[in-house]
Length: 463
Ligand SMILES: Cc1cc2nc3c(=O)[nH]c(=O)nc-3n(C[C@H](O)[C@H](O)[C@H](O)COP(=O)(O)OP(=O)(O)OC[C@H]3O[C@@H](n4cnc5c(N)ncnc54)[C@H](O)[C@@H]3O)c2cc1C
Ligand SMILES: NC(=O)c1ccc[n+]([C@@H]2O[C@H](COP(=O)([O-])OP(=O)(O)OC[C@H]3O[C@@H](n4cnc5c(N)ncnc54)[C@H](O)[C@@H]3O)[C@@H](O)[C@H]2O)c1
Image 1 (tube, rainbow, N blue to C red):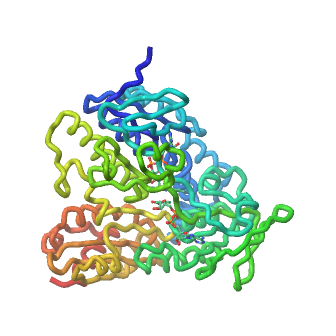
Image 2: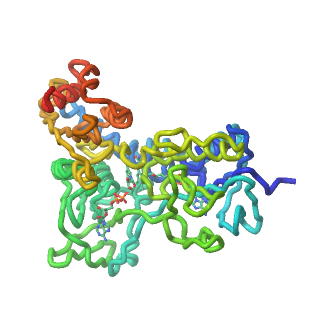
Image 3: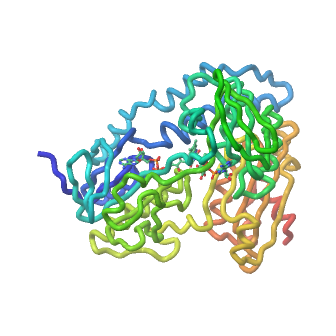
């Protein structure tokens, strides 16, 4: 007879839930994970992985085209879609289920609801957790309430990343990360893309990031319209007309809504424990939900940082602290301790896989000033770095570091330019390690790499 009692129950087997379960099981606690769709979650099948595969082909082609003397060739769209299908394992989670089995984690398939303290119901069976219930249910696309939108059956990001037939024309509503990446991807796949943004692109990042990405999108042929709002939608004979208030209208075969996320908590039984369905779950730095000693929330659902790597970082802290608390062991919850997700506050790394790419970590100038830091901002033209010029003819880009003048350490770094994503980890180490500028001078970047921008930033700051 199968058991219904576990030390730990994890709801949601996305990348984050899987990592929590891995840590609690490795720590000797019996662990059940419950998944309504595919083990591996959004990231593996509908978000990070397929989106990056769709972007990669055209990106490699453009990179070749930026080196004089290289014949760049063409993109095979059908082969690109097949490569995407292969990376998402044809939307089969057999491999991930096998991994769970190997790790000794029990899996129940179905939609879980919380049914009171430490109790979780799936299809009429109630499971009980002796130590902790962890909510790792992720987030879903936010659908804005705009007249006619629902009737034109718009795409959400899932539809875009699992596309089978590339539309001739695509209108994207929303100038955030999904909007920008999907505009880049579909322009590369041959769609005529219009990107609608109420303000500039990539709002929370350094303003120059959105400006350079907008310029890059225009070069790809994307019609970037900032300062406009979609006010109505109508589909006639397969063509959608999007009304833009006083700014006219635009037509396309398909519309993608990319206006942010909502937590997957609406039908989670939260009312059984006095919380509201549809709310984000707020936690302390050990990822324990405020007001509970047995309930944790990790990943997108806690709204701390909606990124896979940051959710998995939280998962490692949460899994380990559940094990420590179960053994009445030491909880290392001082900032930067083993059991806290301190980096969520001021050291989150992110790459936007647009063209140019944006790679950032920590605070922007605006965020640092708002937080009350005494800062100095140092900018450098990335195209002036020798390694960049060799990497791509006409390399255009920019780097910024935000320095805490009191401690002379970095609060944030942003790079914008072709292929800058691989520069990011050094910046993350510098920010998290609070490496003094005086010591950074001794971290010598190799010549002639794009990393020499570090030396140029320090020289611009002065010694
Ligand atoms: C288009 C797109 C591209 C992205 N690209 C990147 C990227 O390149 N890099 C990056 O870091 N982030 C990226 N993100 C963000 C990333 O996808 C999320 O941060 C990540 O998936 C969050 O992981 P999670 O485990 O919290 O949630 P999810 O991956 O959403 O997993 C949650 C799981 O819980 C399950 N579930 C939900 N409710 C229940 C329930 N009641 N019972 C049982 N199971 C349930 C779901 O079926 C799902 O499998 C992207 C997002 C989008 C939309
Ligand atoms: N490469 C990556 O790391 C990556 C890629 C994709 C998504 N993500 C993550 O997924 C999350 C979701 O991305 P997203 O782009 O959906 O959200 P987002 O919050 O990044 O951007 C949403 C944008 O839509 C705009 N918007 C909201 N309502 C609107 C409306 N009614 N009309 C027009 N515009 C509207 C917002 O002002 C914002 O600019 C983000 O937190 C992001 O970090 C990460």
